[in-house]
Amino acid sequence: MPTRSIPAKDKLTICFAHVAYQMAARFKLRNTGIEAFEVRSLDELERRIGEADVLLVSGMWRNEFIAKAPRLAFIQSISAGLDQYSRDGLRAAGIRLASAQGANERAVAEHAIALMLALARQLPQARDNQTAHKWRGMIGDITQREDELGGKTLAIIGMGRIGSRLATLAKAFDMRVIGIKRNAATGKGAADAVVAQSELRTILPEADFVALTCPLTPETEKLIDTDTLAAMRPSAYLINVARGRVVDEAALVAALEKGGIAGAAVDCVWEEPLPASSALWHARNIFITPHTAGETRRYEDNVLDLLIENLERLWRGDAELKNGVV
Image 1: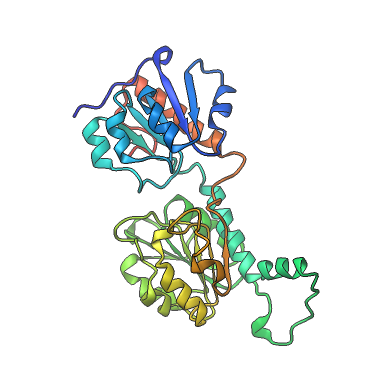
Image 2: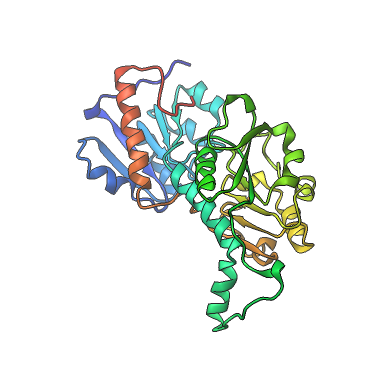
């Protein structure tokens, strides 16, 4: 089906769909003159999606909405991840799609570094001790002390913008960095070396930290499973700022409980919000943040910059969108 045409600025209506982000308020400050409205729930989006020519959305998207959106010509995803969208379905309907890749690369890379520091410096335990009014004494057992990042080896699985930025930050901490990517021939950036994903099992035993920054694809779903966790050092830590489904959660819990790895820090899980019944809540030496790695005070404006750029391209009739996918 041919691509749907986007209306002129004075005829255009944008829908901002997110449970918390202040997209509409930040957009209004730009004085574009473009009509826009905001929805905060899935039900409200379903009711009003037929009014929108352009949609900014991430977790609220459902592919069945395609049939309910006769005007929709363009989706600017609020997130870098796009696994929730049926690209074939959008393409068949003539709806363009662009990701927010790059809008949070600094934030997510910094969050990954923060998680690594938290585990190495035992900050979760320090906070627990503070809550309990416990002053921990000095430790004679060297293996139980806080550690340093310098001199450690970091394996980064996924060397896109976030992974590449993480490599740069890690080198500032004097870490050795090995990147793992589908095409190892496309450059290593700040990493000391880059290998193909097929060599993952060979690299894992060398790593003190394994950071996931890869997209969720059929090839990366449950990439971290019982076998890959067994290949890691017992002293190593797993960091996930990618997608929850990249990790087999049952395998991770088992590895933590038996001491197969030293610990983990995860910003994303299979089911969000994380159910109260999840074994992750009680797993040994795990640090959980609620999918906030990319959520900073600058995020809305970073995404809106992408939106404005892509609207201008669509009005000019450009075939290529910034971060265009469909």
